[in-house]
Length: 429
Image (cartoon, rainbow, N blue to C red):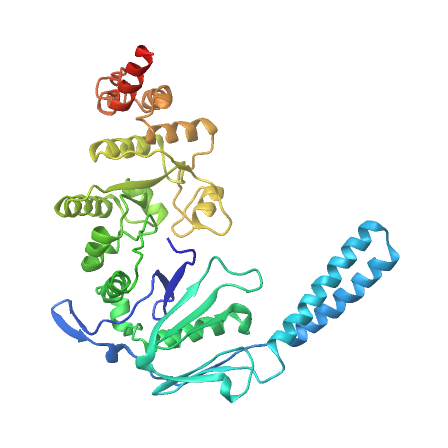
């Protein structure tokens, strides 16, 4: 896998999608009863824009002067430790001065976009010869590099690929994050990645995601795999992207986060209910079987969430058993500042409706809820039985454990040919 993580920016939604895209022409998409041909020109935005790069010379020189002064004071007035610290501060001040020299004292560059062309500066500062002029057809990709950066550069780095050259603009070349994202948004709009607002709000088109996936497979030698972070509730509105995801970008296991399968609890979480997750699970399995791929879903579930009771956890365990799902790890609810669930946890009521909501607070109840989600593990068997007794639902044990409270011992796996050959060799010797 490459060491650099690239993310193409979708300015219309303000979100990021893994990979980069080269537009492959127009595609046709049905939207309700009507259909519309969306071409690259339909989605282009030719609004003129200028993003002036920022050279922080003044701040660097002030910081260097302060470090020189403090370093000199520590170097000559304190003992051995102070001398080491003083030398370090003087070294940092010298590095800042060298950075100012590298920046130069010319005019800051400008990323300028007109109705028909784009000007890209080669460096942070320089004269008029420091800028290259391209037409929109020369643009190839615009994305961010977020990892594997040199310690001398500030991430993320905005990368602009053209037909002739690759331009890199680190974060410290812009006055703010907004300027860097604005530059990416305008450049992506020239590439035709900005959808009309009507289509964005309708959530009934998967053209950008499907084009992005297809272009990544066509133009890149490395195919990326997605292990988690998929909004399974939106995939029914993106059938082409869903199909491409299953066929090319699932490495075997795909993690999704239903968090619970009890509608009353998911209502408190503001998450889709069990019906949406079940439809997604059935479609995933059916399509994977048609493609001849061995792929599985790993659900992410939470125990002890406000609104969740032991009876609810029993229902979740039965759901997992019915749909042949197993989880190896369960997240116990932890209050985090600023979230709705934390507000409900502390107040015991819904702040919008005022309805009283059960909150698991004792360590015993939290332990039993977690054990029910891990009912298939031998070490949780006693806790599961205790939880069922507390709920008055001992008969569920037969459904969860197949044969009541007893469990068949798994037969030992057959020995491999390698082990058999090793043992026969030892007997001969």
